[in-house]
Image (cartoon, rainbow, N blue to C red; front, side, top):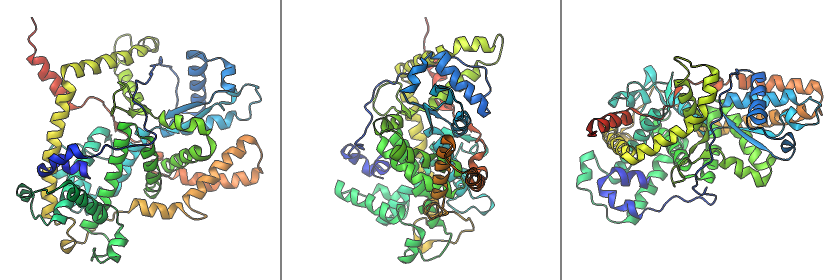
Length: 499
């Protein structure tokens, strides 16, 4: 809250240098992550059998690890949700193998879902809950999108990952600024010009008041306290829910960037009920599996190492951590760009792919040395600031956070966190179903359970995952290079005098 206001509101700028940095007791020390781009393998991976072949190929044939190593070393594999599920299914199928080597049963591997894919599903979850459509109100996402320039391409059919992150960021900034104006009694954005920020202590009190009044409370609490006088769906009520959900996304993104696993772990616990409430039963199940493994199943000395392994740092600099799976997505995009044209055979790709990682690092270093990265960040911040101003004026016009001017809304929005908590709890709740699946999987692999009971549990629990909204593949764009970078690259190239 303090960071946003000190960045966006001029009278708070001088507090920025006095704000403390975020801390994490298990903070990952910045260092260059060892990354190896393995050669491509012309093998389908859309089936359980295909995933078996892929795992054995890379560990035994490409990396050439000795078979005895798998008897004493545990390997953590990060992937998207579908790959993770298929890898586990491959383990289940191979559990009956009587080979003396554990690699033949794939037991040395443990799988977990990547953070980028979790963030992508969170965007999809929040987007569908707050989009609006024909019943849109003043804070529905479709309304806010249409208020901003150059955002018309945003949609939920094919999610542009970075574009949605920027869109959510500017909405959050606008909501925080409007919440501050409501508490301070400012009626229009121009009132900031005459407002004088007295001290850092009062600034901190202001931010705490925003959290207490407009970020943390549930709709039921606001109605019980008499603050929200119109029951049910309202504009300001939806603004409170939206700011809560977007602040959680900001917290996750900030924790990833700075390598703070404790904060990431906390957000995973927040997102689990939210996924479940939004119908993303598979992602909720993956997070419950991760939390259960961290607390109970994985060896304590390696659990934190595995969790930290979901992040990489290609430069070794502070604040430059990324999700491991997004690095793979970017590499996949590079490979696909070379998969067409003359002589683009599987054999040629297999030889050229290992070099793509090195070329990518050289390109990043070139961008940094030319100052392209800094220029792009400057242009992006200016654009975000102007868009935040547009949304603040829109929120002021519609009386957002001023409950005396609140209006009834036809847009039905779910309080994902609190509704998800209710659905996860109880003997027949989502958490109990996950534990049944988890125990069943262990019993099945150890062949220690009555087949009739196993069949009954499978029929009950699998239907939930099969019916999950997140079972489908989310069409996405995760291009690392944005339009702003391309524009800066071209303008820089045009201005260079080559002799």
